[in-house]
Amino acid sequence: MPNRAHGFRSGHLRQEVAAAAARMMAEDGISDFGFAKRKAARQLGATDADSLPTNAEIEAALREYQAIYQDEEHDERIYAMRCAAAEVLDMLSPFRAYLTGPVLEGTAGRYAEVDIEVFADSAKDVEIFFLNQDLRYEHREPRKLTHDTPEAILCFDWDDIPVRVTIHESRVERRGGVERARLEAVEKLIADGLPTP
Image (cartoon, rainbow, N blue to C red; front, top):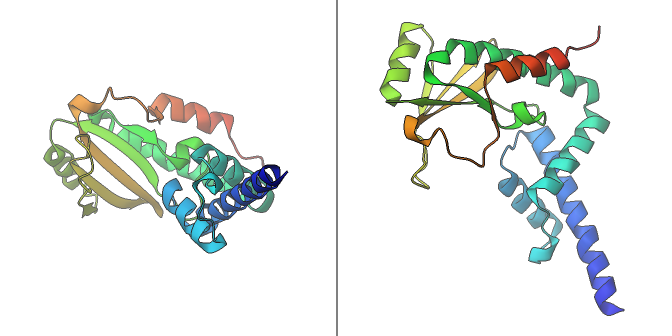
């Protein structure tokens, strides 16, 4: 009996942490599942590893939160961000550009950026391309975490929508584990998600 009670409390706390993390992602612009999870766990006093939800559980809670509290606004935001993504993907087509992250997944919160990955022989090639397009951007240094760490991150606004372009070496394009979509797939998502008047 005590084990069952502990399991119930642990499962309930796990749901609370997932819901709190989802709310932070939807309302505060947090895009990192791990960061949102840890912050929510601290706020709720969850110290047991069994109390921490998986990213999939947080994503489910995020979708539920957005459906309840941000339904129409969220749909319009995703549509606008995907349209911006398609324009940027089209512009960056010489660099094998992909949409990834919350805009692709349909979970982007109010302050999310459009995440674009490009694969180029050199980050300088992309920066020169931006300069030739007269596109003002901010250069961010990526954190060196793995051998697949990006070469550079360029951030800019596209019609008031924040965009982050992550530049990788050409050789890492085939790596798995990250959901990505080319322009054609994004255009299909846009066509399928046309807002109702």
